[in-house]
Length: 459
Image (cartoon, rainbow, N blue to C red; front, side, top):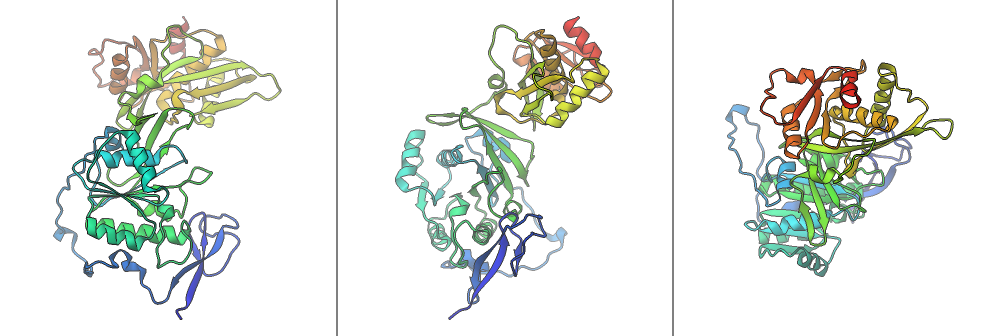
């Protein structure tokens, strides 16, 4: 009888140890090591995806980099413009893409919608969580027909690869990687060893066959992708599907991309008939209101190559209790404290005993420093209870000395504001160098200090 080999794995980072230890030396987490059955001595899982196929193993040999021939591979362009943007222009053949998100956020709906939209490609959708009837029910709700989209409900990787050899799909979708099980690893599905081995088999298949593979992954309660951290290192692209399940908008964000930018995002609206692409997100991120309210401003930000105008909401009120509150949603709390200190030190506004609440409308999380001026204007507007006209927007960074600093791609921000009907925009005067601002019809106010902005707003 073959001997069973066990090992200990960290459930946080995937590190392996021959014996149990209390603290993981790799990630410094406590009590995360669990024992798992790894494999038998008489199996070789390195060629797992070749089992049951007629493919031949070819030994790799080193080549000089000048001898390697390279040809630009045409990407697979989908009908989803948001996904194309996030992936860097389309699906790269032989790539492996990992999509993570909270339960119920719409990961399976998104991938089934993508599978049904690839009309010229043969797509194999493998589900380990739903039955064929459930997937068919969702497809009927989406209302898209695709004769070359095949559904397989299976969790064993050996049978999956046999079906792949017979079908020869152009695109492979796995829902989800935590449900797959390899017979070469005897631990349960979803364990560190199983996730790593199944991903390695799929990665080897993707690279050798040139077939793009999409993996849907679960996340932990902290919001991180479940499984070993090495899972994110193995794949080519990691996408995060975000959004509040109580709101209709979803954001597809790139956190790793070997074939494009990591600062792109796609925005969708969840409807009864599936996910709708939002081609102009600035319109949904700005409240449609006719009258002006204090504490609300519009700031111009950039997400990758896409300019966005988003609404900044603030509320400044005297502290009811001894310690003033500082609460932010969608913005860095430490940067808010820095801007409050600048307003108090450089502007002379007594905000130390005020409760400050800041919210980025639309559920976005932004880190662009170009929102600094919009946030300062919103805070002062709420503090003085003076409304800023809703036709005014801002795009500039604020320094510790109270100076208004330049930001990149100012022309795109101004053009987006002009397209949406804004009449005034405040920028840094240092952005005027080398930029032709005369071609814009919007009124451009250039300032070098916060005092100049406030005098232009409040007189």
